[in-house]
Length: 77
Image (cartoon, rainbow, N blue to C red):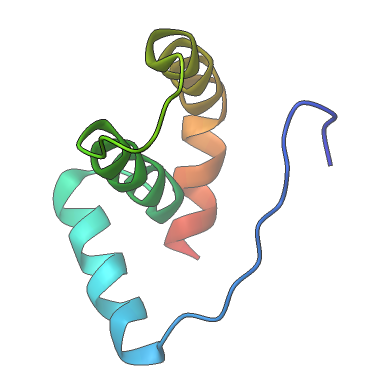
């Protein structure tokens, strides 16, 4: 694992996995990108979260663009 990332592991309902995969495919992105984008959207609308959103978005965009092809290839398998 790269030093600038962390791995998150969580249980996800199998019936929602199919929905997630279809939703990501509809957007033309990997499931990883779909989840990250969804979390960012939720965090943008949370008043309680006090983050430097611009800096976070820049880093997230860099990471997402850098790994986009690999993540898309992996999500197809």
